[in-house]
Image (cartoon, rainbow, N blue to C red; front, side, top):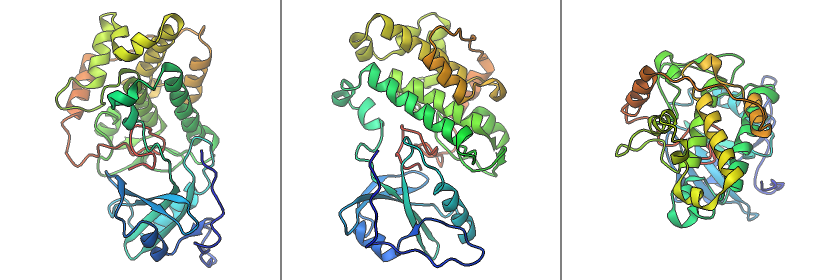
Length: 327
């Protein structure tokens, strides 16, 4: 994780009003416009667009422009920035600051040169560089970051909102393949929605199959089919199967098992990230059997044909499968 430099020449602090509590730097909009060369280098798109830029001191940045539908008022935006500024973890991208002009709201992050895992696992030339040890480190890092968001930050950050309990929305937003079926049915999301998306992320990394692909069988249905036939080893991508042997293969199969527990159709029985990390580290701990019904698989198949307005980039803060800056 790159160390954030002190940007004393390119940003300014906003004068605080008695009712404001933001403790993070506010960039001048023109500074960001120049740094991104008029927002000309887009590196990610989805519910939001992300642009690469370079500040006057040479530091590379990523500027995320929030969609108008995701921010209703300046106060709401400032509240979210205040909360995001308090999140500090080695597996979270550092938020450097924010800016806004009229109805355009921007978050300024440190730039991550590798961008996202898609560029590796779905690129045949790069995929061979990812052995199981590297994949395991990525998976565990994501789990540690999510545990921090859910249990250690004191803020209880979840997939689409920040709050202490479940939150409601009036519309479905997220990623095909990563969406918790319970959320789709009820428009209610919680930390267990993140656990579901994390399970899908594990399966995507191991199988190197896209979570959504209109030309292939949905990932979860494919994995469950392999599992039910006693062919879980077929979930492992052929390159990884050829690279790894013995204990590594057994460990990968255990991770597949844990991923299936994370996508349990009953949100309440999905494990916490703390339990998941325990399962990762304690190989001797027995795992319960996954419980996914035929009806659940039908619902998952239906999820793939939802509104095309759903983003092909995951909205979670930590998802490595989309832009590292979220969507």
